[in-house]
Amino acid sequence: MTEPPSLSAGAEEEKESVPTQLMKHKNEVGVASEELGSTNAAADQKEQTTSEIRQGCVYRSSGRPENTDIIKSVVMDQEASRNCELYVPMSSNRSAMESSEESEEDMYRDEEEIQREKILLCEANSSEHKPSVSPEMDIMEYCAKEWRGNTPVAKRMRKGYEAVAQKFASIRRIRGDNYCAFRATLFQALSQATQLPRWLQSEDFTMLPENLLSKYDWIKQWQLKQKPGKKMGEISDEIKEYLILLRKKWKNISEIKSPTEKQEACDKLFKNEDEEYSLYEALKFLMLNTAIELYNADKNGRRVPVFSWLLFARDTSSNPCQLMQNHLNHIGHSGGLEQVEMFLLAYALQYTIQVYRLYKYSTDEFITLYPNDPEEDWPVVTLITEDDRHYNIPVRMCQETML
View 1 (tube, rainbow, N blue to C red):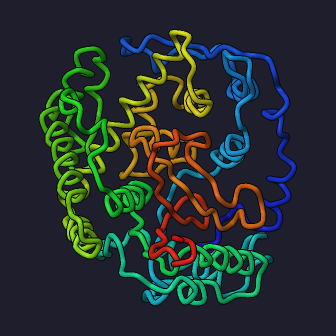
View 2: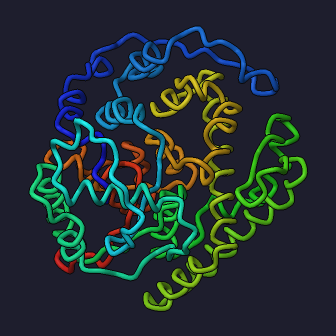
């Protein structure tokens, strides 16, 4: 609901001028690899720069070009600020607002939008409890309430919501606490679950913490939201409990036949903070496991999805150890999911995450799939974002769309 910084006129021009060399480069480039078992892996210097790897990651061992539309978007967008979940209703108390230093960006926004951003900045750290998933609201009523201005940004948002309203009747707002991508995705997945996914049925599923720790000593640096001071070696049993809880909740909800009762069960789960955040920690650990599998597969010469190259092309995550230390450990603490990590979440869950990116309205990236080349049998969940930082969920698919 905040106006994305990237949507100012100046930023739009800058994005449009970014070279699209990913679409043209056809030479296969190797990624510098590092041993996972070494606790010093995070300090090793990469032989290639991030930009070089990005330019070379479009073509894989088969010599066949991948679909690079979404990859181009990730390269352009993930350099922006880390997810900072700033989400409060428009009716929030404005008494704490103070005028801030004017910036060039204010020239392109009306007073209403500037005030909205000030409210968010002032109350982002408020300890006041907010519902994890708010009740349904008509999607166009929500749009009219949040985007009343006449700036180009507001007009584009309204057009985007009008397009979403052709498919969905309502919207549910998601609490913004750096877990919103997890919350929105998991809520949608459970709301439509009819069976337990195959990966949750595996006998080795709950043994992941023990198995990974036996191979990679650096995983002891894993940190939980509830207990940031503890090391992984001390809390591996708790991670196992979180994985068991994820399987139990998924199984119980998927067995509910009545759509109304299923929705009530989801609403009840997402009102229990202890269980809710435990599930998010389980998702983070599944992402780490998936990242390790992809990294090892690429190192052994097997074909991997393009996003995996980008994931490990970042200076801050050249290997799974760095990914854990600099990214996964911070989710829920000081940041949320970056664009490329949305791909990783999708692969970990084996779900296709379809996102209406409203600020991309009228472009090919308005509806983005994570991953962009999903397996045919993967279920699809749908989210809405105004800025690639905060996510809400559309609900109640229109009858003509269902038909």
